Image (cartoon, rainbow, N blue to C red; front, side, top):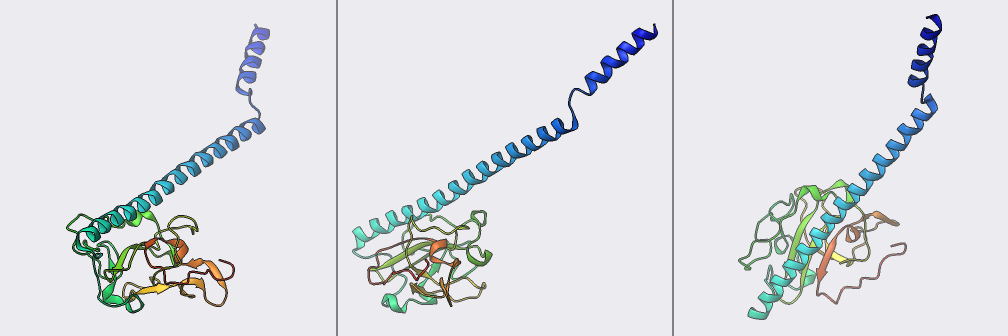
Length: 216
């Protein structure tokens, strides 16, 4: 009887001690790695969806203003001034923008429902959330998802023209052509401070010298 008891106890001990502490730790580490990979993949997919949404929004607005131009022989105007003089009142921002005009019809006279920015898209330079901006004198135009990219880009809808930085909710807004401070070149180039690379921009302006600063 004693032998049977010892035998059963031995079996139970072996069944409970089937995995060593090292093996259990290895399993935990592997599970953690897999979870991290899954989360990274998910975040990457989410980010791609957001930036694709922004690109499609700009392309949609471009289609609308091209249709308008075909009918009226000019683009929807925000100003009668030359583009060198585009200033605060000449630049429109979307309804969800914390800066500027903040209006649903940020492109005038279209009589269409326009896309509006969303804070879930993320923040750009200095952790400030950007938005959609538009300015035009009827001949030249700039449409931009301005400072809406959390990571800088250089390939898709990248122009070294656009608007000014978003510093505060009361900062005035205006057009800029390859500005040093706005383009991250203020006493040396810093890509993290380059608004042009944290934005998607479409424009027919050809008079801006868009030569990037050294290091950009």
